[in-house]
Amino acid sequence: MDTKDEPTAMKAARESSLGTRNIKGLAHPLRIRILGALRIGGPSTASSLASRLGESSGATSYHLRQLEKFGFVIEELDRGSRRERWWRAAQQSTQFDEAALVRDPETRAFGSEFLRLVAGATLERALSWIDSLPSFPGQWAEAGTMSDWGLRLDPAQLRELKAEMEALVGRYPRFDPEEEGKPGTAYVSVQLQLLPRLEA
Image 1 (tube, rainbow, N blue to C red):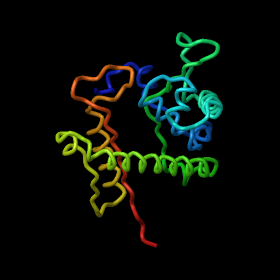
Image 2: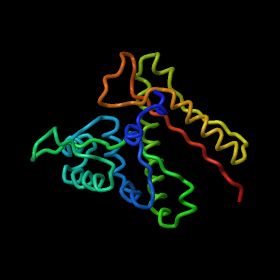
Image 3: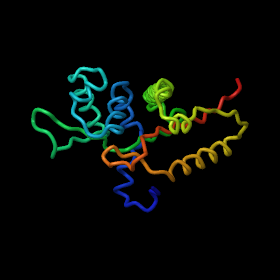
């Protein structure tokens, strides 16, 4: 779906931007996992999340409240009861400007930790895909890939490549756990890494 024609309020619900004010809210491994579980699995309770993630419901309850405080999750007031609260992700994705690590000392520590946690989650998804491959039907086993290429680029070319790849991914339908998908479709994780290595 092309997002450029959506109302501004709908665009705002698609992504959140991390900065000095809210990045500390995601610089924790369980919060990253909880938010990911809500974005992929849809609304849930603390106890259901605890069961899925192998954590205690006390831990998931605490970290859900922290995520709410920083605006990453919202409570579903029309679902649940006083004893069991339901939570949903407030946005579909999170954006972080990696250049802030250079520009802003306040963001540096939390930003570095956040990126390490994202890298860990990316690795976990890749390993899960590898482990699942033997059980995939033929069409799905042949459709995915884990590839890398070595390029020689200057900063302007790297920014151009990033913009082109983001535009390409943006042409395809976004995953929404609360919408029924078309038959034959599945959740697909697109992991983009553009990692310049500067000589010493």
